[in-house]
Image (cartoon, rainbow, N blue to C red; front, side, top):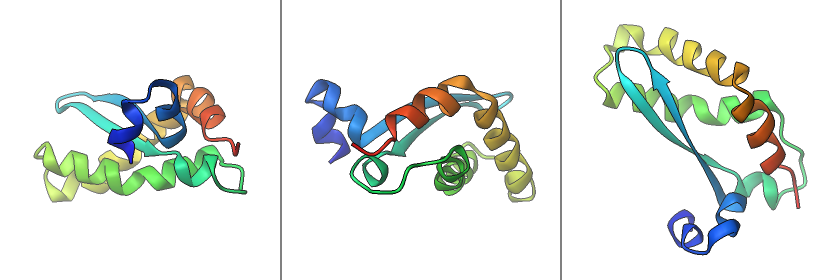
Amino acid sequence: LRDAASALGDIAALVSYPLAVPVPGLGTLNLSFNLLDYTMGKAAPTVAGLLEQTRVQVRGALGAKGLPEAQLDATTSAVLAGLQANSDFSTSLLALAQPR
């Protein structure tokens, strides 16, 4: 659905939101936030909820970059804390995820 929506222009923002997150020493994590659960749902999203939805994706992306298992949890938490402080995430993404 995400790939099909991306071909339709603005509607893609109702389905998923891409965000590139630079991680020093590892490169960039290319994340995709599933917004359909929120935009078509009844519950209003929170920054904390969006962060939790992202935890597994961030951890997997860090592992794919070769980060050792012993560092995954701490680095995932650090990346999530950075996202929470990022206005593109905490303001723009949260606004896009509002139910329609």
